[in-house]
Each structure stands twice: as structure tokens, then as C-alpha cells.
Image (cartoon, rainbow, N blue to C red; front, side, top):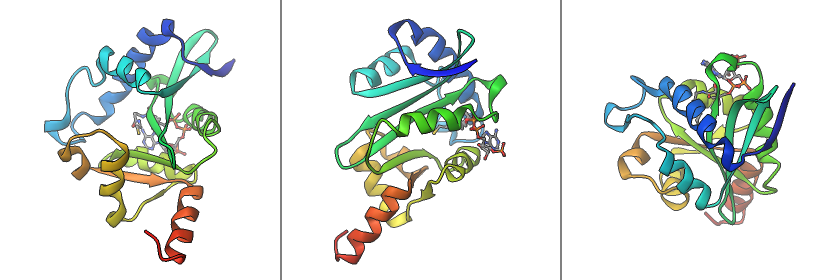
Amino acid sequence: MMGIREMLATDVDAALAIINAAAQAYRGVIPVDRWHEPYMPRDELEGEIANGVMFRVAEDDGRLAGVMGMQDKGAVALIRHAYIALAIQRKGVGTMLLRQVASLAEKPLLVGTWADASWAIDFYRRNGFALVPKEDKDSLLRKYWSIPERQVETSVVLGDGRWMEARQSNAAKGGT
Ligand SMILES: CC(C)(COP(=O)(O)OP(=O)(O)OC[C@H]1O[C@@H](n2cnc3c(N)ncnc32)[C@H](O)[C@@H]1OP(=O)(O)O)[C@@H](O)C(=O)NCCC(=O)NCCS
């Protein structure tokens, strides 16, 4: 049976295996100069945990099936590092994990992904997210993510319904 739970230190090896297998989807799709292998080295994942990314895992009969994180950034929370085991993608596990991870943050949610990862953009759209306007996305990426400028250029940001509402009410008040 599929369940969602907190990621433990003992899950790191299995989580890395899922992440780096699922990230093969990016190969040949994202800009060549941004691809590296393994896509997520162990020290990067451990660094993300140390930086406050709270990970949840999906587990199917004792086997890890997916990984997803949430990072609280004050005014907003970010969905980070969403990866489902190749064999069980498109069966609803990502949606289940996203709901669980989103419920950890009672605040507007943002997610960044590669502009060319159309499947990921579709996945978030199906789950109530919308692409943020181009004039906002670079400043959001610079404010909330620690990524090189080249990745800012080649990424998009999606916001959930709460984020879109907050943006509209700020605009109505004349804010930014
Ligand atoms: C994106 C991802 C996390 C979604 O998890 P999932 O369990 O496969 O997604 P769900 O089954 O809950 O939702 C499926 C929907 O997501 C989108 N989707 C997921 N994988 C897709 C693919 N390979 N091709 C096209 N659409 C895809 C579609 O909208 C799909 O709906 P459909 O099957 O009816 O067309 C997972 O596919 C994955 O790990 N992909 C590779 C890594 C990645 O891109 N991560 C996103 C990082 S931000």
C-alpha cells in the first residue's frame, strides 16, 4: 500500500537513486550546459536538508516510490525536488505527495522548474498552479532560489491559487 511519511537519514540512498533515475528525463531537454551527472550528488541533497528543505517520501510496501520537498521562505514556501520512481510515474503518486507537502505550509506556494520540462509544467498546472508572469519570474528566482544566472534564464516559476490571489490583491492595493 502507498503511504507518505517523513524522509529519514536511512532513506537518503534510495532517494538519490530515485532522483537521479527520474532526472534522466532532463537529459537532452534542458540546456546542455546545465546537465551534469549525477544530477543530484549526495552532498547537494544533504545540503538541501541542512538548509531546511523538509522532505516527504512516498513508500509502496516498504519500497521508496517518490521524493518531494518543501522549503519555508517566510512570505512563501517553495516546492523543491519532486521525483517519482520511473516505473510508477503518471499513476497519481506525484499528486499525492504534492498535496501532502503543500499541506505543510499554510502559505502561498511557488515552484520553479526548467522552461523546457513541459511534463513538469503540465503536472503543476493539473494541480492548480499557473505560470507566473514573465515580469515576475526572474526576480522571484533570484529572491527565493540560490541558482546561477544561466538557470534563471532557462527556468519558469509557477504559483498556486493562494499565490495568484495574493498577487492580485497586492496589485489592487498598488503594491508589487
Ligand atoms: C513530474 C513528476 C514529479 C510527476 O509525478 P507523477 O506521479 O508522474 O504525476 P501524477 O501521476 O500525479 O500526475 C500525472 C500528470 O503529470 C504530467 N506528467 C507526468 N509525467 C509526465 C510525462 N512523462 N509526460 C507528460 N506528462 C507527464 C501529466 O499532466 C500527467 O497527467 P496524464 O498522465 O493524465 O497526462 C514525475 O513525473 C517525475 O518525477 N518526473 C521526472 C522529474 C521531474 O520532472 N520532476 C519535476 C521537478 S520540478
